Amino acid sequence: MDLFADKPSTGRKSSQPLADRMRPATIDEFIGQEHLLGAGKLLRGMLAAGKLQSLILWGPPGSGKTTLAQILASSAGAACVHFSAVTSGVKDLKRIIQDAEQLRRSGKSTVLFVDEIHHFNKAQQDNFLPHVERGTLTLIGATTENPSFEVISPLLSRCRVLLLKALSPTEIGTLIDRALQDRERGLGNLQLTLEEPVRAFLIEQSQGDGRVALNALEAAATLAQAQREKRIDLPKLQEALQKTPLRYDKAGEEHYNVISAFIKSMRGSDPDAALYWMMRMLEAGEDPLFIARRMVIFAAEDIGNADPQALQIAIAAKDAFHFVGLPEGRIPLAQAVTYLASAPKSNASYKAMLSAAEDVQAHGALAVPLHLRNAPTPLMRKLGYGKDYQYAHDYEGHVVDQQHLPEELRNRHYYTPGESGYEKKLKERLDSWAAKKNTKT
Image (cartoon, rainbow, N blue to C red; front, side, top):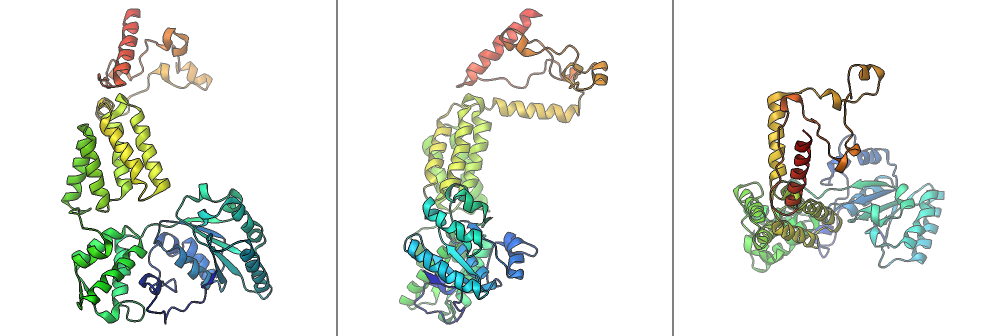
């Protein structure tokens, strides 16, 4: 257990990791999460009022969950106790409750900060519940996993779930610059320089994780000191990160070249190349959900009804990545990429969509045929709404020869299935229905 509510913002030991030394002590120092801390937002209001609710902070590593809990507790004048799934047990909780009840009688509240609350089993979480209900404790849980799956419903219903976002490149850059300049807690006394391309590489490789950025910066600074240099160059940062930069600018031409190669490899039914380009993007720091979105689009546009399961697999891969995160989230993405590249291809439904859109643009809002109109009132029925509508289920094979398009588009065809995969069956079915309709006419 670690009472950290009253840790000072100054005088932190140089032996502490840089990420701990640079941990903000006030909300003015905190970087990121403007959607929660901006003017008029929920947490800003809590800070102003000095009154806390029980919270679950859900967000990726390095987004500031622990720091935010500390600042919230401090602003409310509460004692903040850190409870660990690894080192703390029922006896520790009983001791915390006793201390909290004493503090409560003296007018001071207690915040119980439970880091990685998803590591606690149901029985352990049940132990918190009565004390949160009575107000003996204000619970702030932090988790990188979806609390809907990891936190018991009774506890979840008594907490506000707040979603924290990975830090933006600009916010990571601010963290880096602050650490380089701060003489008291950071690296300012070393007077190190960080060239812009090296800084950009560090930002990209941090992937929104402030702790990763500061740890890598500290390691690179240690290398510079050992070599008696004042400049953190790319080789030092590569050594600190144990990573070599790939030529891939997410805002530049190479970004579009690589994603183009990725899509065209899947379209060309080359799973090896598609997998290579996907890993190129992931290793270079591309947002995995950007890749997942492209796969969902590809499944509908380039595979379509040749394999209807392709879209389901692409969606499942996206959901699986949301659930698992990096690095394991690459595994379902790889499964989906190889499946999509190996699936039969058809863009017939995509082309049909474009043709239908052209007619909508060319003809405007054409009238719905009377027999297809809804007729909920006697007046509408008198006007002919729904008259002569033929209910398909009343006919053999559930097929009826009936005009469903506006009169101006009679006999217009958009969707023509191909011969690939499942579309061959669809083509045979539609051809069979067309033959039955022609036989009746």
